[in-house]
Image 1 (cartoon, helix red, strand yellow):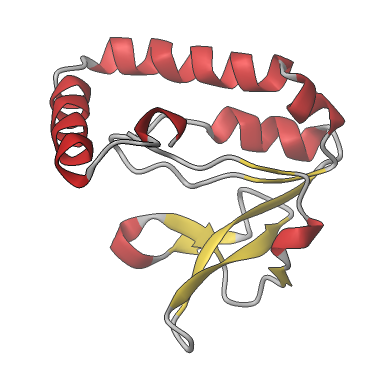
Image 2 (cartoon, one colour; image 1 turned 90 degrees about the horizontal axis):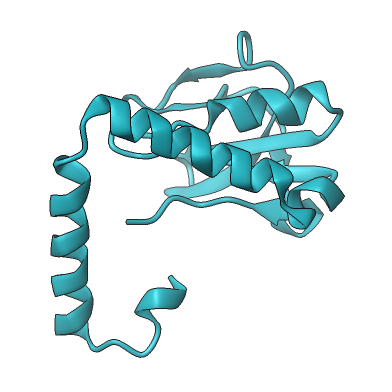
Length: 134
């Protein structure tokens, strides 16, 4: 997001096209190395270390695999939330996840999200939110 601040609409569209092209050219091996590097950098950051409650995203196939961060969050005692689509109000909301094995189900577009019974989490209760971007 920061890289796109100050760009006009045409420049943003061009930058997104260039980034999508670069992402689609990545081999699975390079994508895995990049995902590992991203997880490593985040888990070593002061923001991650200080956070007691984090919200991550469920990665789409073309996004970094950050599931290791979710596992680390839960094993280190952090509260974990993931986005869940609330069909009643037609928006995404944060919802608590206590187990990656039992608390997730397939949501919109086949992306894993917290089950409908998982409690919603207010965004102001989160210390750190990691979101995907191009």
